[in-house]
Length: 178
Image (cartoon, rainbow, N blue to C red):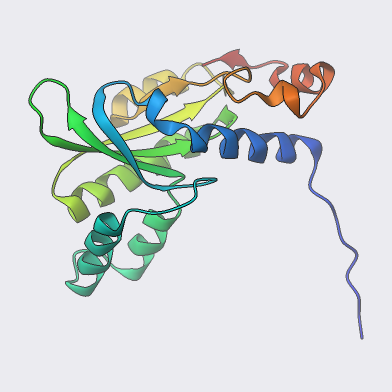
């Protein structure tokens, strides 16, 4: 029998996972343009919205989405449903959460937002929430593909409770704040 050696995740991976879980739990306060926000699904969030799950299962059963798209939707970090402040229409937000936002997060959010729009038949806001941008040109990419970028700082995630200041300083080194 061969036993594989366990490789623990790096410190930066642990900080990133903790950030995503902490921000994911408190999503509605970051989706400020929605009235009566409800978390339909979220990392680190206990519970789920049966109405949303019914929509998702129906979409797959009726062939609106395929299995690959189904898997994409389950990969969305947080899904929020609310009402548009101006006209009261139902709006969904499909939110990707990353400590450091990269191009692939933005592209993935745009793709997932389009899948969500097809599932719900409602306006969907694809969004990425993070603390840092690895490249400032990603702001233009987000504008081009219609993805909302939102900042949630390390303080917002209360990461200073879990990691010392030197570790968190190193994580943001060489990156611009979102």
